[in-house]
Image (tube, rainbow, N blue to C red; front, side, top):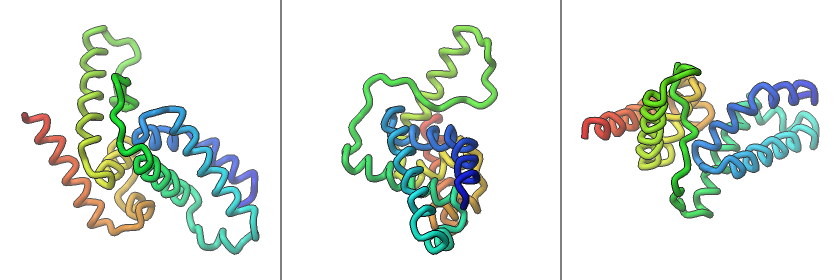
Length: 171
């Protein structure tokens, strides 16, 4: 991959990568650090021994997403899942109007906070699959490729995550 192509891919996808990472690490600064480190490592793969590593990577963006997911997992291992204190959610409800009433804004924020808290209760793989499918809009085949698993496993993880959220709402 040439430098120009690489820069274009990063420019187009950086916000998406940050949203993905911040959904797991909660701190915008930590998410930015993780994404930046992964971008630098991917570029090193392309710049060292041109062609050899690039052939093994396949789809660079999916490889980068997998790197970010793995880095977030490492982050959680180090932090031992420290609970956040009163931080507002990074989840955005699709289709929310720009100029909403204060009551609608409160309801939207409370709903997003509830979903975020419930997602945090899920096993890590279920969280990742749910975020990629429902928040980022990836297809099951793309998620399976990123997480290096089967589409059947993705469907099962997504089903379990949805069931957990549905049961939580019913309570």
